[in-house]
Length: 559
Image (cartoon, rainbow, N blue to C red):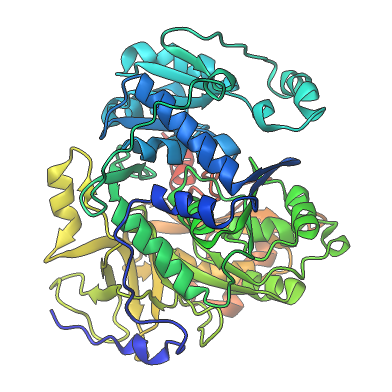
């Protein structure tokens, strides 16, 4: 397969087309940061500051405790935490013992948790105190040997740490007080344990796994994506190269993207450690809290997802806050509507560009240039050392310029494979290319466009319809806050187009108004036949709208 890297002609001279990646484990970067930025703030969390030296010391402390529990190189350690100091410490502490981190969504229900823990064979889990009952209910169905329990209050400053249990009781109706035992371990006790026993573990960056990151499981069961230290180091160093104006040791990164999602883990946590940047952590996305945090901490880098930027733009008190510190934002996890991009840049004065990637690629493969030529509606161009092509859907050969086909990727950030699923791993690759399952095309300048997930494409009356195109039009309507389009069964057309709409407050939208609006901007066969108005749309933890869940809800209604 031949490939003309025509996108390289557009690279700014500051971005290298190839990088000499550090062949060392991820945890080495934390050690270096602790040496280079000892007293500098590494984390800020709800009023509490932690320096790089303290962060490293506590990661070593955690690693030492794991070794005392008998954790060996290659053992899987599940981390079921929101963004917090403990999430960073347990991640790097696990890597320090040669462990494999299994990022686990704190929103998981028991069934989902059992599947992931069983599939990964996790030996240890670190969880929030309010999740301890859930973990306790399922641990007998798993291979778990140890549960480590922590709480938000563990890193709150006085007097917040005393007040928080009362807030927790009011919010969740529970205050959990686990006791130290042979198989249950309390974070505060761990941090006071003997620290002199840590034994350094040798890691081969290119061969040894750092992470088992489970895919979303929108079709079938989630798969554990095997990412090596080298995969993650390479992708993070690509990110450093892409935002070349960012200054080593000087940036302030907003950590609202969850670290249990690979995008937040790479572009916030790992990038900040490599950059010597201060991470300002928020355990969940609340628009006003984000606005306050940006103004107070003068955030410069703000990786996010489209729904996060939409939530901020539609906040009634937006104009009260100074967001001018923002310099660069790369949006991922879902398509970025052009209208959202333009409004966000106008308000902040910073740059917001769309990127693209998958869990299987650590995750980023493409982005528009933050400071350079960018194309609205495009996911941009491949990152350094990343090859991309479009495969014809029938012949599976390289497609022509402008022809829609499946996006395929090669690069140092591409996964080793799926955990314990050799057949699925084999199906994911063709001649060394990772098959993404996304439909797109490349223009004559080498810029790539995603038209949709192959499984999301709607076939109505023989026409191929791409939901993203319709969503772009809907987002330009002044009365729409959020929109998603899906194909639902239709006895005549095979499928028909349905739009799920969240109106902006104060707008009384009607189907007739939207039908007339869409007919002005779309071919007749693309116009939604059904509109459903909702107060909110179901989303993943990172803010990706769950199109499949909406379709399943509709299917249940007609059964």
